[in-house]
Amino acid sequence: MGLAKLLLVRALVSMFWKRPFKGSLVRWGTTLHDRFMLPHFVRRDFSDVLTQLRLSGYNFEEKWFASHQEFRFPKIGAIAVEGVELELRKALEPWNVLAEESTSGRTVRNVDSSLERLQVKVTGFTTESRYVVACNGRKVPLCPTGELGEAVAGVRYRARRLSEELHPTVPVHAPLVFDIIDVWNERSIGRCAYHVGPPDGRTYTARPINAKEAEERRAERFQRCDAVLGTMAAPKEQTNPMFPMTLDLRLPAPGYTTETAKPGLVP
Image (cartoon, rainbow, N blue to C red; front, side):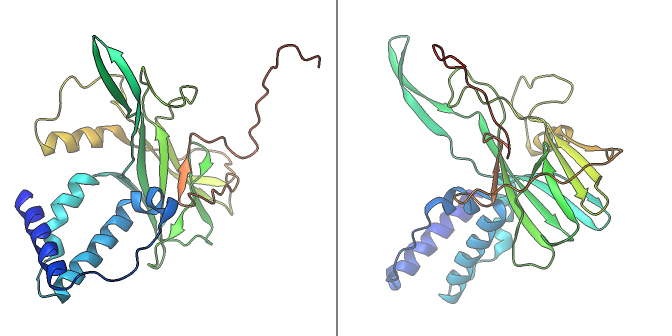
């Protein structure tokens, strides 16, 4: 894997040395923290890079980097019901560096690694169909990928508590429970859950010794659940103009209000 990455960098340097890039730069804005955090669009963008290299005479094959992509974006699990498939994969999540603090005579800067993100990919239906996907009771903003019957979205959530973190009042959202809801009949036709840690409450005392053990741990944390009996209405629509493809569970759900007591004010 290291040799393949080194070969890619050498080919890019050689390509730009022969033909420098003279186009204008694109200002992506918040799209970098929305669309390009998801493995689907990262893979598609990387495929365009390899295509450009092949057009320049460097015959790179995409299968050379399949192990890199699977290592960085491992598959969590999938369910299929009534012709609809829901797949979960790890996604990218930038972690903020906190302010400087003095610890044991040294100055350190901690990283808030309490947030994580995963990709929800659905095949077998369009956004105008009778099915929607909900995560912890909130609608996932699925966006079409350009392929027939395929849509993706990101879910950002707090995975764990840390002694030092941003937004300390935001609770932990794990486990994440996903439902495929039939809007016409108002019922859940399929459900799965993803746990950040072992579902039985254990804690991992060491790192995985190899890729097989890491895969087994991911499979252990993904559970296929029985569909919920009774009616289940579709959640309310919620849109985020800055991050239209991301369900950020830190933000309050539509219609959620809080009452803040203000000392000294007479009701």
